[in-house]
Length: 251
Image (tube, rainbow, N blue to C red; front, side, top):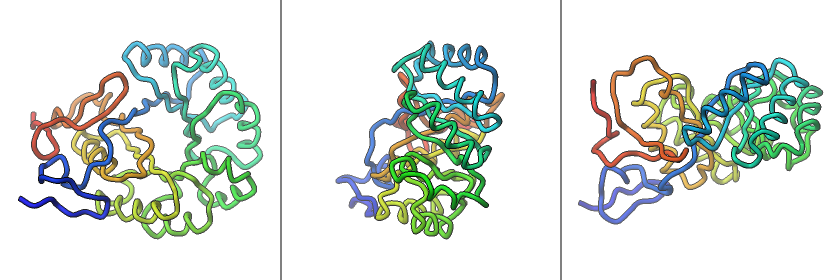
């Protein structure tokens, strides 16, 4: 069968793994630590470290001072053993964000997700370009229309695409197509959701050459799921399995 043509490329020899095109073999995924005190944050981080994860996404947004203290303690405890990302969940205003940035400037934060509410994120233009390059749009990014607006405003250097937010794979590829010529990196995220949609997002992510970040941990803590399989995680790296379709088994 002839190779399947896709806007992001194709491969010789059509197989299920290359239906959308394949530009990545494996990518580190982050795992999420919720808003909690410093000791609990360190304890959970240590648990993830023993399980082989090497990227943390830390939820913040209630108190910029305390948030910064948690990040600094994580850096002191683990050094370069963890890459640290931050998700402020729209919790800051511009002055609080600037305070957080100043206090954590030596902590090596890889990116900050949606620090301001969508209603005020135009204020991000007051930040240096190099700072905005490390900001990821989430709540402000809902569909292709919002992606186009954000790309024109040059507020974010990263788009966080969630299948549950943008309407599925087609909506995700529309956003990705807008991001590519704008030189905006892709960050694929999720909610708490089944392996089915997590794996679908993983395949979409691997089809885009400008995918740089994964945060696809939404199925890891589910009490139960309808399927198993779909993907594997080894030493923090995530990749699809080698079974047909999405590679899932109905339970």
